[in-house]
Length: 410
Image (cartoon, rainbow, N blue to C red):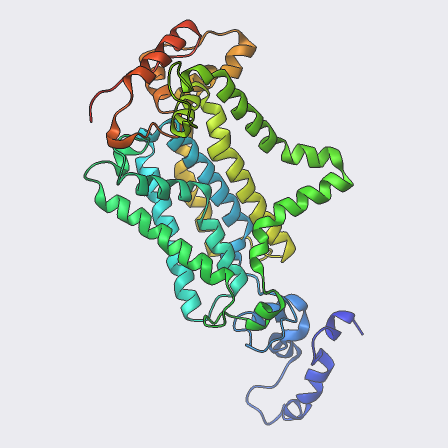
């Protein structure tokens, strides 16, 4: 007998035996039983068919025999790729051209709200397992989302910063909306991570088997350690972005030490000045530190979690996955339209100028763009220290980098 029919009881033969009495009434029954009808009713005809029907409403005491039921609308490959592309595109826009990212930014906030509210409702109705609740929270908690929450909070104390057009003076509603999304994300993260027994998820038996799902956040470090021991070359390549970013940031601080720690001043860490000056002089280092490395780590966490729990292997043509593809289109189109501006910025990077011998682009647009390339220029009350800007512009005039125009408006 085919082993496929022995996976889940009752098998096909058992099903047929139990229906023989009904089949015997073929002459008297208005609807005689046929083999096609048996195959249609028999959910054990294949493993895939059985699991699809089983996972529509898994029993609470299922002993987690088949693991967590898949949810392709959360962990499907198209959903994940769409989230990665959207996050990267919007991060680039916010980092290098925030004035062009307003509309795309709100699409990210609305997407975050829709996903978090859906997760919250599904948890309340016990229709979502803990694993997929956590995956949905991790997907919505991209570095970009945390980046927005940080600026929304900082806007209450600082007037001048990268996202002042969105979270500046008089923009109370946008601030509260983003902060509200951050609070909702944090609440759902705690609920998904902490197994207290007060919140009932679907398939609670799987929660007993996998009590500490929070370990997915450290899976990349486990992978790094394993790869360094088994295949050192690949392991070093995997951690290279973090090492390179840390080293270049230290070099940037060293090169700008005279502007950061000015002659005659009492020494102090000067964290704000370090961040501001290194960001203006070496924007790509900040981009690596704030955007690229955190995003790569976030992607690795999600992908390793999906591999560990065999998640996201459902129907690729599901409604949620197709919808996710269209959500990613606006950020991609926006990035393509801003290509000329990004190309100018790329040519003006320090390491690109060093390779090509180009002294940089000094037009007004490039200067304004360079003024926004650090994570921010946040200082209390929105004032920059004139001495800092003057020192920076003097240094820029003697180098190949663009100067930063000083704006005295509050």
